[in-house]
Image 1 (cartoon, rainbow, N blue to C red):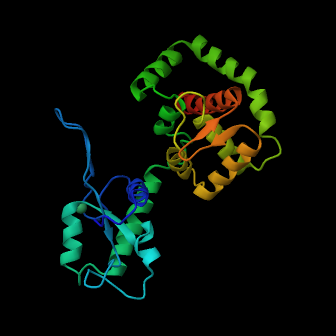
Image 2 (image 1 turned 30 degrees about the vertical axis):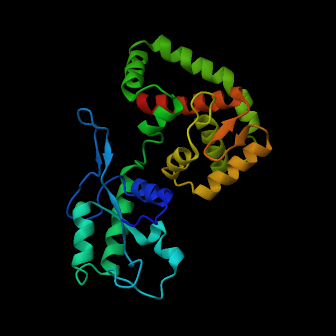
Image 3 (image 1 turned 90 degrees about the vertical axis):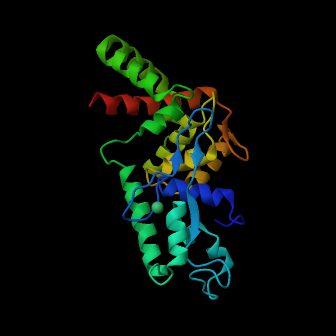
Amino acid sequence: MSSKLKEKVKVYLALRSGGVCAHPEYQVRLTENPAGEDQGAIIGEAAHIFGEKPGSARYDPIISIEFLSSAENLIYLCPTHHTLIDKQRKTHTVAKLFYWKTDHENKMREATTAPSVEVTYDEIQIVTGSLSRTILLQEVQEARKAEEHLDVIKNGLEENLDLLTTTLTELGEIDKDVRRRVLGYSRWYEPASKDEIFQKLAVFGHERELVAFNARRLQDDGLIQITENHYLPWNEEVCQQAAESLMAEILRELEK
Ligand SMILES: [Zn+2]
């Protein structure tokens, strides 16, 4: 792994790879849980497909420096397979590695985009801030048991949705969805980071640029302010409504 690679590029590659080695014959998970007094660890490596300098595996002088250090030229591997592809260079050609990469990343994307489930459990955690998945599921199960509780949530949602609906009128469906989610994830307490929001919206097929564009429009509307790492809400009420609207989706999914 090159130390010149930007941390952001490596994180992006690891996310896109689902934290799993892209070698097609193994499914090695590249995050290790905390053990004893040790913290969790990342053991994945960002390996160059086209080599980064003369003498390195699969080097080609025609390739631009910009492409060389971009995520498009990197494949996420365990240390063993990283070593292997750089030692057995004739077997591990550029074409083969691009095929491994693309196939692996597509599979990971599909695995996290179940068509019948519009809201992922990871999203639940963002929407609900510090609530853990376990606590939330317990709450939902309680709510299922007590229909009353569920009705209270639903009624509360319906009463509160007017302001959000007004805010999002006359937008295309995709822009509406993106802005509502940005607002929901940016709500007053523990707002999700930009990277988290990009990642969550990528699951729905929304490109980073589209999300950033819509966030800028939300800023123009005075609903959020954009900082280096966050979209921070100015309007607590609208963000809260958007978060509740995401919560409503989750409840609908769980009721099925
Ligand atoms: Zn591996």
